[in-house]
Image 1 (cartoon, rainbow, N blue to C red):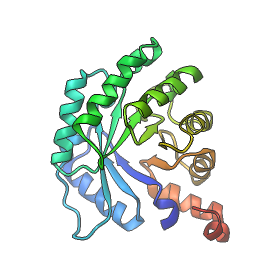
Image 2: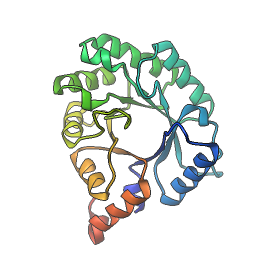
Image 3: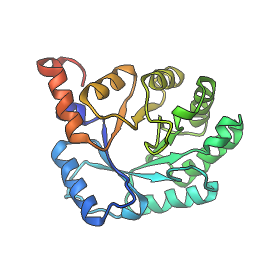
Image 4: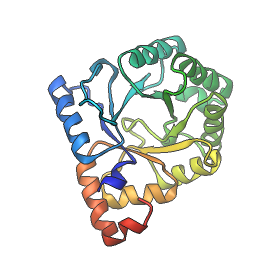
Length: 228
């Protein structure tokens, strides 16, 4: 379970989440051995065990992306001050649909400036609402703006979350220069394995335990040799 778990951002972004829910979420992430937890910005700071290598990812401009770039930048900067290692920002999806790629790029660049490397910046493009050309252009804009990952989805859009087609397209577009995070609607071990096989280098999961147990069952004894 642990090797596949290292792909996972163990995610809890429900608006009704309490501090007690987040504390339990941290404990579960530590038990499962996930790469990170992903939470809302007002849940910081978090208490992690000393010497823990669990990363803290925080969303920014979430979930609509319809925030001024200066607001996203301020949100990201505050999250870093409060202990975030990674920022998952939502682009202005309408700008991407309208072909306003310079607007998309400058939005990402503002957050990158506010949360410079080594903070990891993931860019949520909401791939389910974009055409293939829009996905490609948005991924390239994220790369030019200095992002570290492109990410399929918030998981909150009614049009859906990650698809294998989008992950493959995103992975081909960034060509290994950026990571690809598949997020939204990944509920089984088979789903998770398929996303990694399609090119995902990180997975956003809210049902991490069930997915990882399913992946272990799917992979069986071959898991040691599979690269997971």
